[in-house]
Length: 413
Image (cartoon, rainbow, N blue to C red):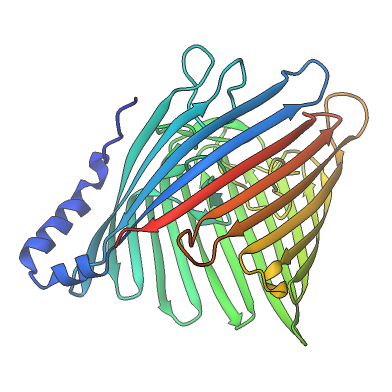
């Protein structure tokens, strides 16, 4: 088993300040401890991917058990409050062999298979002033220009700092700097690269604002920069229109412009996406469109999740000049008196892809999710999910995939 990763020295000044605050402020213990919370999540994950194209390996198939211990303190009393969060993760192989590794559930071993077990501990020092917070250390981020991946046994994380400022009504400011990434199937932090673009960097900077113009209309702007590789400007709008009678129409529109940073190489991409979702009772019908323009594919940090309307279970439909359409249907069985049971299916079709071989590149993907969360009784909170996907392409992999996930989160205090 690999050694757990210690917190890096760069974060010790805030940790030291936290310690001094606890010693010097006896009343601080009440907020620091009383407002704390802890949880333990058990995640059982079976992954099967069958490759359908000629000449490919037969399949990737593994089964693993993961545990995630999350501990979040409150803040010490005073004008400036300090706190500390911890994330401890461990994964264990239940079944893998015969050349079926490579699902990204488990780290690879030296023989081409998977390790039997792995784990790590991440610490996050935090500070609060009024309605603003600063976090330094291990971060899981969900943002239009950088998104942590949480689609396997254990989530991916970043190392860095993030600040959120909410001192003006309806306005949220955010910014930060990330220095390294830890993949979902790794315990080692490493420098970041750009998907399909390449390069290596130890600095990703981002900043921007969310502004709520109306209770049902929010606008977002972000700037992101992977030093010496690319920079990106993002603008998005989310609007929900109440149509009455239990009906609504949600509009999610996104645009980003990406260019080179430094002298890495010329880069040019414009990405437009829009997803419109009509809801009535337990039903929701969505229609989406995504278009890539420019000489390059959409750049984002490798092994993270791009913020695109047509980024789905397997594909991102973000190749050079690609156009893609999505049709999606969701149903919440609570409308039939079965709360906790949900269904989703969608189909995405892409074309106009530039490829090395002659002719137009085309691909499609179909996803189906069925999920149930126990609502009461002894097993309240137990979640069961089946995720199925099929992909066909004339320039990439043809594959069918199934993921079975059983999860249970227990509150510790």
